[in-house]
Image (cartoon, rainbow, N blue to C red; front, side, top):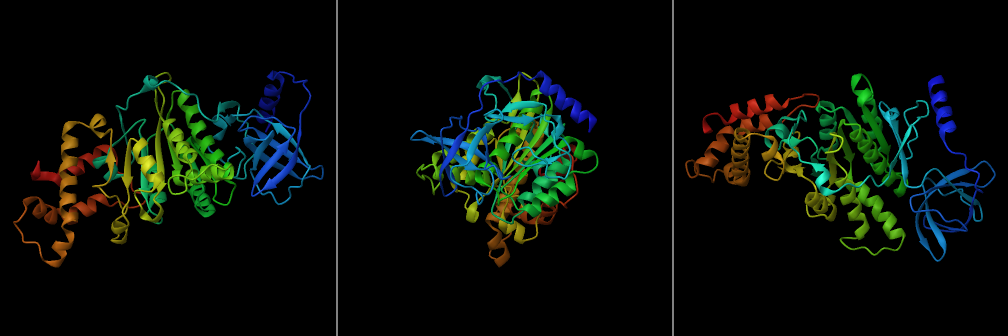
Length: 443
Protein backbone atom coordinates (compact mmCIF):
# COMPACT_ATOMS: atom_id res chain seq x y z
CA UNK A 1 0.00 0.00 0.00
CA UNK A 2 2.86 2.40 0.87
CA UNK A 3 4.54 1.60 -2.46
CA UNK A 4 1.33 2.39 -4.35
CA UNK A 5 0.89 5.68 -2.45
CA UNK A 6 4.52 6.66 -3.11
CA UNK A 7 4.17 5.94 -6.83
CA UNK A 8 0.93 7.93 -7.04
CA UNK A 9 2.41 10.94 -5.24
CA UNK A 10 5.49 10.79 -7.47
CA UNK A 11 3.35 10.85 -10.59
CA UNK A 12 1.28 13.78 -9.27
CA UNK A 13 4.42 15.80 -8.45
CA UNK A 14 5.83 15.17 -11.94
CA UNK A 15 2.60 16.19 -13.71
CA UNK A 16 2.38 19.83 -14.88
CA UNK A 17 0.00 22.07 -12.97
CA UNK A 18 -3.11 22.84 -15.02
CA UNK A 19 -4.61 26.23 -14.08
CA UNK A 20 -6.93 26.51 -17.09
CA UNK A 21 -10.66 26.86 -16.35
CA UNK A 22 -12.61 23.62 -16.04
CA UNK A 23 -15.15 23.38 -18.86
CA UNK A 24 -18.44 21.52 -18.64
CA UNK A 25 -21.56 20.92 -20.66
CA UNK A 26 -25.18 19.92 -20.05
CA UNK A 27 -27.17 16.85 -21.04
CA UNK A 28 -29.63 18.11 -23.66
CA UNK A 29 -31.18 14.84 -24.91
CA UNK A 30 -31.07 11.08 -24.48
CA UNK A 31 -32.54 8.75 -27.09
CA UNK A 32 -31.99 5.00 -27.16
CA UNK A 33 -28.69 5.19 -25.30
CA UNK A 34 -27.39 8.12 -27.37
CA UNK A 35 -26.78 11.24 -25.27
CA UNK A 36 -26.55 14.74 -26.73
CA UNK A 37 -24.46 17.20 -24.71
CA UNK A 38 -24.48 20.95 -25.37
CA UNK A 39 -21.74 23.41 -24.53
CA UNK A 40 -18.89 20.91 -24.38
CA UNK A 41 -16.27 20.18 -27.01
CA UNK A 42 -14.31 16.96 -26.42
CA UNK A 43 -12.59 14.69 -28.96
CA UNK A 44 -14.04 11.34 -29.98
CA UNK A 45 -12.98 8.70 -27.47
CA UNK A 46 -12.80 11.19 -24.60
CA UNK A 47 -14.34 10.17 -21.29
CA UNK A 48 -16.67 12.46 -19.34
CA UNK A 49 -18.08 12.36 -15.83
CA UNK A 50 -21.77 13.06 -15.35
CA UNK A 51 -22.48 14.26 -11.81
CA UNK A 52 -25.94 15.49 -10.81
CA UNK A 53 -24.76 16.81 -7.45
CA UNK A 54 -26.72 14.20 -5.49
CA UNK A 55 -23.99 11.61 -5.18
CA UNK A 56 -24.69 9.93 -8.51
CA UNK A 57 -21.67 9.73 -10.84
CA UNK A 58 -21.97 8.26 -14.32
CA UNK A 59 -19.39 7.89 -17.09
CA UNK A 60 -19.91 8.50 -20.80
CA UNK A 61 -17.71 8.40 -23.89
CA UNK A 62 -17.80 10.80 -26.84
CA UNK A 63 -18.58 8.92 -30.06
CA UNK A 64 -19.44 11.70 -32.51
CA UNK A 65 -20.76 15.21 -33.22
CA UNK A 66 -23.99 16.49 -34.70
CA UNK A 67 -25.52 19.98 -35.11
CA UNK A 68 -23.11 21.62 -32.69
CA UNK A 69 -23.66 19.01 -30.00
CA UNK A 70 -21.40 16.22 -28.75
CA UNK A 71 -22.86 12.73 -29.07
CA UNK A 72 -22.02 10.44 -26.16
CA UNK A 73 -22.78 6.92 -25.07
CA UNK A 74 -22.98 5.71 -21.48
CA UNK A 75 -20.37 3.25 -20.22
CA UNK A 76 -22.95 1.94 -17.79
CA UNK A 77 -26.68 2.10 -17.10
CA UNK A 78 -28.50 5.31 -18.03
CA UNK A 79 -31.45 4.75 -15.67
CA UNK A 80 -30.42 7.56 -13.30
CA UNK A 81 -29.61 10.06 -16.03
CA UNK A 82 -31.54 13.36 -15.87
CA UNK A 83 -31.73 16.27 -18.35
CA UNK A 84 -29.60 19.31 -17.65
CA UNK A 85 -26.98 17.63 -15.43
CA UNK A 86 -23.38 18.73 -15.76
CA UNK A 87 -20.94 16.80 -17.96
CA UNK A 88 -17.20 17.27 -17.27
CA UNK A 89 -14.27 15.82 -19.27
CA UNK A 90 -11.69 13.74 -17.44
CA UNK A 91 -8.48 11.85 -18.25
CA UNK A 92 -6.47 12.06 -21.45
CA UNK A 93 -8.63 11.58 -24.57
CA UNK A 94 -7.54 8.72 -26.78
CA UNK A 95 -5.12 7.29 -24.21
CA UNK A 96 -5.47 4.09 -22.17
CA UNK A 97 -3.65 3.19 -18.93
CA UNK A 98 -1.08 0.40 -19.34
CA UNK A 99 1.80 -1.03 -17.35
CA UNK A 100 3.20 -4.06 -15.49
CA UNK A 101 0.64 -3.53 -12.70
CA UNK A 102 -1.93 -5.38 -14.85
CA UNK A 103 -0.02 -8.66 -14.62
CA UNK A 104 -1.73 -11.02 -12.25
CA UNK A 105 -4.90 -8.93 -12.28
CA UNK A 106 -8.35 -9.00 -13.88
CA UNK A 107 -9.85 -5.66 -14.89
CA UNK A 108 -12.82 -4.26 -16.79
CA UNK A 109 -12.81 -2.07 -19.90
CA UNK A 110 -11.88 1.02 -17.87
CA UNK A 111 -8.92 -0.70 -16.22
CA UNK A 112 -10.73 -1.00 -12.89
CA UNK A 113 -10.10 -4.22 -10.90
CA UNK A 114 -12.83 -6.86 -10.89
CA UNK A 115 -10.84 -9.42 -8.89
CA UNK A 116 -11.38 -7.85 -5.49
CA UNK A 117 -7.79 -6.59 -5.32
CA UNK A 118 -6.52 -3.06 -4.65
CA UNK A 119 -6.71 -0.29 -7.27
CA UNK A 120 -4.12 -0.44 -10.04
CA UNK A 121 -1.41 2.13 -10.62
CA UNK A 122 -0.88 1.83 -14.37
CA UNK A 123 2.17 4.08 -14.61
CA UNK A 124 1.99 4.59 -18.41
CA UNK A 125 -0.39 5.67 -21.17
CA UNK A 126 -0.85 4.12 -24.60
CA UNK A 127 -2.88 5.36 -27.61
CA UNK A 128 -6.19 3.51 -27.83
CA UNK A 129 -5.72 3.16 -31.59
CA UNK A 130 -2.14 1.95 -31.24
CA UNK A 131 1.08 3.42 -32.59
CA UNK A 132 0.97 3.00 -36.35
CA UNK A 133 4.14 1.83 -38.05
CA UNK A 134 5.08 1.29 -41.69
CA UNK A 135 4.44 -2.05 -43.36
CA UNK A 136 8.19 -2.70 -43.68
CA UNK A 137 8.70 -2.16 -39.94
CA UNK A 138 6.77 -5.36 -39.25
CA UNK A 139 9.24 -8.25 -38.95
CA UNK A 140 8.51 -11.52 -40.74
CA UNK A 141 7.29 -14.67 -38.98
CA UNK A 142 10.20 -17.10 -38.89
CA UNK A 143 10.02 -18.96 -35.56
CA UNK A 144 7.46 -21.64 -34.60
CA UNK A 145 5.06 -20.99 -31.73
CA UNK A 146 4.33 -23.93 -29.44
CA UNK A 147 0.62 -24.03 -28.52
CA UNK A 148 0.70 -27.32 -26.63
CA UNK A 149 -2.08 -28.70 -28.87
CA UNK A 150 -1.00 -31.81 -30.83
CA UNK A 151 -3.20 -31.29 -33.90
CA UNK A 152 -2.25 -27.61 -34.23
CA UNK A 153 1.47 -28.13 -33.64
CA UNK A 154 1.62 -30.98 -36.14
CA UNK A 155 -0.74 -29.91 -38.95
CA UNK A 156 -1.18 -26.12 -38.76
CA UNK A 157 1.98 -24.98 -37.00
CA UNK A 158 1.76 -21.43 -35.70
CA UNK A 159 4.57 -18.87 -35.82
CA UNK A 160 5.68 -16.27 -33.29
CA UNK A 161 3.90 -13.06 -34.33
CA UNK A 162 1.19 -14.80 -36.34
CA UNK A 163 -2.51 -13.79 -36.17
CA UNK A 164 -4.83 -16.83 -36.12
CA UNK A 165 -8.59 -17.17 -35.93
CA UNK A 166 -10.48 -20.01 -34.23
CA UNK A 167 -13.79 -20.21 -36.08
CA UNK A 168 -16.87 -22.20 -35.12
CA UNK A 169 -20.51 -21.98 -34.20
CA UNK A 170 -21.74 -21.76 -30.64
CA UNK A 171 -20.99 -24.61 -28.26
CA UNK A 172 -18.36 -26.36 -30.38
CA UNK A 173 -15.39 -25.75 -28.10
CA UNK A 174 -13.73 -22.41 -28.94
CA UNK A 175 -13.42 -21.29 -25.34
CA UNK A 176 -12.04 -24.66 -24.20
CA UNK A 177 -9.45 -24.60 -26.99
CA UNK A 178 -8.15 -21.11 -26.14
CA UNK A 179 -8.12 -22.18 -22.49
CA UNK A 180 -5.81 -25.07 -23.42
CA UNK A 181 -3.61 -22.77 -25.53
CA UNK A 182 -3.34 -20.22 -22.70
CA UNK A 183 -2.21 -22.98 -20.34
CA UNK A 184 0.24 -24.67 -22.70
CA UNK A 185 1.70 -21.84 -24.79
CA UNK A 186 5.22 -20.54 -24.22
CA UNK A 187 5.17 -16.73 -23.87
CA UNK A 188 6.63 -14.03 -21.62
CA UNK A 189 3.24 -12.36 -21.16
CA UNK A 190 -0.31 -13.57 -21.81
CA UNK A 191 -3.02 -10.92 -22.31
CA UNK A 192 -6.59 -12.23 -22.47
CA UNK A 193 -9.55 -10.17 -23.61
CA UNK A 194 -12.90 -11.76 -22.72
CA UNK A 195 -15.28 -9.47 -24.60
CA UNK A 196 -19.02 -10.02 -24.71
CA UNK A 197 -18.87 -13.47 -23.14
CA UNK A 198 -20.91 -14.94 -20.31
CA UNK A 199 -20.02 -13.70 -16.83
CA UNK A 200 -19.75 -17.31 -15.65
CA UNK A 201 -17.03 -17.99 -18.25
CA UNK A 202 -15.13 -14.93 -17.07
CA UNK A 203 -15.29 -16.10 -13.47
CA UNK A 204 -14.20 -19.63 -14.36
CA UNK A 205 -11.31 -18.41 -16.52
CA UNK A 206 -9.97 -16.08 -13.83
CA UNK A 207 -10.25 -18.84 -11.23
CA UNK A 208 -8.25 -21.27 -13.40
CA UNK A 209 -5.53 -18.95 -14.66
CA UNK A 210 -5.01 -16.37 -11.94
CA UNK A 211 -3.16 -18.62 -9.51
CA UNK A 212 0.31 -20.09 -9.28
CA UNK A 213 3.22 -19.10 -11.50
CA UNK A 214 1.04 -18.48 -14.56
CA UNK A 215 -0.78 -15.60 -12.83
CA UNK A 216 2.40 -13.51 -12.65
CA UNK A 217 2.55 -13.30 -16.46
CA UNK A 218 -1.17 -13.10 -17.23
CA UNK A 219 -3.45 -10.07 -17.53
CA UNK A 220 -7.21 -10.44 -18.07
CA UNK A 221 -9.51 -7.74 -19.46
CA UNK A 222 -13.12 -8.89 -19.12
CA UNK A 223 -16.30 -7.11 -20.21
CA UNK A 224 -19.33 -9.48 -20.13
CA UNK A 225 -22.18 -9.38 -22.62
CA UNK A 226 -24.53 -7.34 -20.41
CA UNK A 227 -22.26 -4.26 -20.45
CA UNK A 228 -22.55 -1.27 -22.78
CA UNK A 229 -21.34 -1.68 -26.36
CA UNK A 230 -18.69 1.05 -26.10
CA UNK A 231 -17.36 -0.46 -22.87
CA UNK A 232 -17.01 -3.83 -24.63
CA UNK A 233 -15.16 -2.17 -27.48
CA UNK A 234 -12.99 -0.26 -25.02
CA UNK A 235 -12.08 -3.55 -23.32
CA UNK A 236 -10.84 -4.98 -26.63
CA UNK A 237 -8.76 -1.84 -27.24
CA UNK A 238 -7.32 -2.02 -23.72
CA UNK A 239 -6.26 -5.67 -24.13
CA UNK A 240 -4.59 -4.89 -27.47
CA UNK A 241 -2.89 -1.77 -26.05
CA UNK A 242 -1.53 -3.80 -23.12
CA UNK A 243 -0.09 -6.34 -25.57
CA UNK A 244 1.50 -3.54 -27.61
CA UNK A 245 3.01 -2.01 -24.48
CA UNK A 246 4.69 -5.28 -23.48
CA UNK A 247 5.82 -5.88 -27.08
CA UNK A 248 7.52 -2.47 -27.00
CA UNK A 249 9.53 -3.77 -24.01
CA UNK A 250 10.92 -6.53 -26.25
CA UNK A 251 8.73 -9.29 -24.78
CA UNK A 252 6.95 -12.16 -26.50
CA UNK A 253 3.25 -11.65 -25.93
CA UNK A 254 0.36 -14.02 -26.48
CA UNK A 255 -2.82 -12.01 -27.07
CA UNK A 256 -6.11 -13.90 -26.87
CA UNK A 257 -9.32 -12.11 -27.87
CA UNK A 258 -12.60 -13.92 -27.25
CA UNK A 259 -14.32 -12.98 -29.44
CA UNK A 260 -13.96 -10.89 -32.60
CA UNK A 261 -17.63 -11.40 -33.40
CA UNK A 262 -18.75 -9.85 -30.09
CA UNK A 263 -16.39 -6.93 -30.78
CA UNK A 264 -17.96 -6.50 -34.22
CA UNK A 265 -21.42 -6.64 -32.61
CA UNK A 266 -20.41 -3.82 -30.23
CA UNK A 267 -19.07 -1.73 -33.11
CA UNK A 268 -22.29 -2.42 -35.04
CA UNK A 269 -24.40 -1.12 -32.15
CA UNK A 270 -22.40 2.09 -32.02
CA UNK A 271 -22.47 2.56 -35.81
CA UNK A 272 -26.23 2.04 -36.06
CA UNK A 273 -26.77 4.37 -33.08
CA UNK A 274 -24.96 7.10 -35.01
CA UNK A 275 -27.17 6.49 -38.04
CA UNK A 276 -24.66 4.59 -40.18
CA UNK A 277 -26.50 2.39 -42.71
CA UNK A 278 -26.15 -1.37 -42.45
CA UNK A 279 -24.32 -3.04 -45.32
CA UNK A 280 -23.35 -6.73 -45.14
CA UNK A 281 -26.14 -8.47 -43.21
CA UNK A 282 -26.70 -5.41 -41.05
CA UNK A 283 -23.03 -4.72 -40.30
CA UNK A 284 -22.09 -1.12 -41.14
CA UNK A 285 -18.69 -0.65 -42.80
CA UNK A 286 -17.19 0.76 -39.58
CA UNK A 287 -17.93 -2.47 -37.68
CA UNK A 288 -15.96 -4.63 -40.10
CA UNK A 289 -13.13 -2.09 -40.33
CA UNK A 290 -12.88 -2.21 -36.52
CA UNK A 291 -12.06 -5.92 -36.79
CA UNK A 292 -9.41 -5.25 -39.44
CA UNK A 293 -7.74 -2.46 -37.44
CA UNK A 294 -7.68 -4.53 -34.26
CA UNK A 295 -6.13 -7.58 -35.90
CA UNK A 296 -3.50 -5.57 -37.78
CA UNK A 297 -2.04 -4.30 -34.51
CA UNK A 298 -0.66 -7.74 -33.63
CA UNK A 299 2.55 -9.12 -35.11
CA UNK A 300 6.33 -8.83 -34.75
CA UNK A 301 8.16 -5.56 -34.12
CA UNK A 302 11.46 -5.05 -35.91
CA UNK A 303 12.23 -2.04 -33.69
CA UNK A 304 11.88 -3.62 -30.23
CA UNK A 305 12.38 -7.28 -31.14
CA UNK A 306 9.15 -8.13 -29.31
CA UNK A 307 6.13 -9.91 -30.76
CA UNK A 308 2.38 -10.29 -30.36
CA UNK A 309 1.01 -13.69 -31.35
CA UNK A 310 -2.72 -13.12 -31.72
CA UNK A 311 -5.34 -15.81 -31.17
CA UNK A 312 -8.84 -14.57 -32.03
CA UNK A 313 -12.04 -16.57 -31.67
CA UNK A 314 -14.71 -15.93 -34.30
CA UNK A 315 -18.30 -17.00 -33.72
CA UNK A 316 -19.89 -18.21 -36.94
CA UNK A 317 -23.55 -17.25 -36.45
CA UNK A 318 -25.70 -20.21 -37.42
CA UNK A 319 -22.53 -22.19 -38.30
CA UNK A 320 -22.27 -20.00 -41.41
CA UNK A 321 -18.63 -19.87 -42.51
CA UNK A 322 -19.55 -17.08 -44.97
CA UNK A 323 -20.80 -14.74 -42.24
CA UNK A 324 -19.38 -11.21 -42.85
CA UNK A 325 -17.28 -11.23 -39.66
CA UNK A 326 -15.94 -14.73 -40.40
CA UNK A 327 -15.16 -13.80 -43.99
CA UNK A 328 -13.47 -10.53 -42.98
CA UNK A 329 -11.41 -12.22 -40.29
CA UNK A 330 -10.38 -15.06 -42.61
CA UNK A 331 -9.19 -12.58 -45.23
CA UNK A 332 -7.01 -10.54 -42.85
CA UNK A 333 -5.67 -13.25 -40.51
CA UNK A 334 -2.53 -15.32 -41.14
CA UNK A 335 -4.41 -18.56 -40.65
CA UNK A 336 -7.57 -20.07 -39.22
CA UNK A 337 -8.61 -23.13 -37.22
CA UNK A 338 -12.12 -24.32 -38.06
CA UNK A 339 -13.98 -26.36 -35.46
CA UNK A 340 -16.59 -28.78 -36.80
CA UNK A 341 -19.90 -29.46 -35.07
CA UNK A 342 -20.05 -32.90 -36.73
CA UNK A 343 -16.69 -33.88 -35.20
CA UNK A 344 -17.77 -32.53 -31.81
CA UNK A 345 -20.94 -34.63 -31.96
CA UNK A 346 -18.76 -37.69 -32.62
CA UNK A 347 -16.88 -36.94 -29.39
CA UNK A 348 -13.64 -35.69 -30.94
CA UNK A 349 -12.19 -32.79 -28.95
CA UNK A 350 -10.76 -30.45 -29.95
CA UNK A 351 -13.06 -30.76 -32.96
CA UNK A 352 -10.55 -29.40 -35.49
CA UNK A 353 -11.59 -29.74 -39.12
CA UNK A 354 -8.16 -30.52 -40.59
CA UNK A 355 -9.19 -29.96 -44.21
CA UNK A 356 -10.70 -26.52 -43.59
CA UNK A 357 -7.95 -25.29 -41.24
CA UNK A 358 -4.88 -23.48 -42.50
CA UNK A 359 -1.70 -21.81 -41.25
CA UNK A 360 -0.30 -19.43 -43.86
CA UNK A 361 3.13 -19.35 -42.21
CA UNK A 362 3.66 -23.09 -41.64
CA UNK A 363 5.90 -23.39 -44.70
CA UNK A 364 8.13 -20.66 -43.19
CA UNK A 365 8.37 -22.01 -39.62
CA UNK A 366 8.45 -25.80 -40.24
CA UNK A 367 11.04 -27.74 -42.26
CA UNK A 368 10.33 -29.62 -45.48
CA UNK A 369 9.96 -33.01 -43.78
CA UNK A 370 7.38 -31.72 -41.32
CA UNK A 371 5.40 -30.00 -44.07
CA UNK A 372 5.43 -33.19 -46.19
CA UNK A 373 4.11 -35.33 -43.32
CA UNK A 374 1.39 -32.79 -42.58
CA UNK A 375 0.27 -32.73 -46.21
CA UNK A 376 0.05 -36.54 -46.33
CA UNK A 377 -2.02 -36.74 -43.17
CA UNK A 378 -4.33 -33.98 -44.39
CA UNK A 379 -4.82 -35.93 -47.64
CA UNK A 380 -5.68 -39.10 -45.71
CA UNK A 381 -8.20 -37.25 -43.51
CA UNK A 382 -9.78 -35.53 -46.52
CA UNK A 383 -10.04 -38.78 -48.49
CA UNK A 384 -11.74 -40.59 -45.60
CA UNK A 385 -14.14 -37.76 -44.67
CA UNK A 386 -15.29 -37.19 -48.26
CA UNK A 387 -16.15 -40.91 -48.62
CA UNK A 388 -17.24 -41.61 -45.04
CA UNK A 389 -20.91 -42.10 -45.91
CA UNK A 390 -20.03 -44.63 -48.63
CA UNK A 391 -17.77 -46.52 -46.23
CA UNK A 392 -20.42 -46.66 -43.48
CA UNK A 393 -23.07 -47.87 -45.94
CA UNK A 394 -20.74 -50.54 -47.29
CA UNK A 395 -20.92 -49.05 -50.77
CA UNK A 396 -17.18 -48.49 -51.04
CA UNK A 397 -15.24 -51.36 -52.61
CA UNK A 398 -11.80 -51.92 -51.05
CA UNK A 399 -8.97 -51.46 -53.52
CA UNK A 400 -10.75 -48.82 -55.61
CA UNK A 401 -8.52 -46.04 -54.25
CA UNK A 402 -5.28 -46.72 -52.31
CA UNK A 403 -5.50 -43.35 -50.53
CA UNK A 404 -8.99 -44.07 -49.23
CA UNK A 405 -7.93 -47.60 -48.23
CA UNK A 406 -5.05 -46.22 -46.17
CA UNK A 407 -7.31 -43.56 -44.66
CA UNK A 408 -9.79 -46.25 -43.56
CA UNK A 409 -6.99 -48.40 -42.12
CA UNK A 410 -5.50 -45.51 -40.13
CA UNK A 411 -8.79 -43.93 -39.06
CA UNK A 412 -8.65 -45.10 -35.39
CA UNK A 413 -5.05 -43.89 -35.04
CA UNK A 414 -5.83 -40.58 -36.77
CA UNK A 415 -8.83 -39.94 -34.50
CA UNK A 416 -6.67 -40.63 -31.43
CA UNK A 417 -3.95 -38.35 -32.80
CA UNK A 418 -6.32 -35.43 -33.40
CA UNK A 419 -8.04 -35.76 -30.02
CA UNK A 420 -6.54 -34.39 -26.83
CA UNK A 421 -7.74 -34.26 -23.24
CA UNK A 422 -8.21 -30.95 -21.44
CA UNK A 423 -5.14 -30.29 -19.33
CA UNK A 424 -2.84 -32.42 -21.50
CA UNK A 425 0.06 -30.59 -23.14
CA UNK A 426 1.87 -31.91 -26.23
CA UNK A 427 5.04 -29.93 -27.09
CA UNK A 428 5.92 -29.14 -30.68
CA UNK A 429 8.77 -31.68 -30.93
CA UNK A 430 6.66 -34.49 -29.53
CA UNK A 431 3.75 -33.63 -31.85
CA UNK A 432 6.03 -33.83 -34.88
CA UNK A 433 7.52 -37.14 -33.72
CA UNK A 434 4.04 -38.63 -33.26
CA UNK A 435 3.03 -37.34 -36.70
CA UNK A 436 6.03 -39.01 -38.36
CA UNK A 437 5.31 -42.24 -36.49
CA UNK A 438 1.67 -42.15 -37.61
CA UNK A 439 2.55 -41.63 -41.26
CA UNK A 440 5.13 -44.44 -40.96
CA UNK A 441 5.68 -46.44 -44.09
CA UNK A 442 3.77 -43.93 -46.20
CA UNK A 443 6.81 -41.59 -46.16
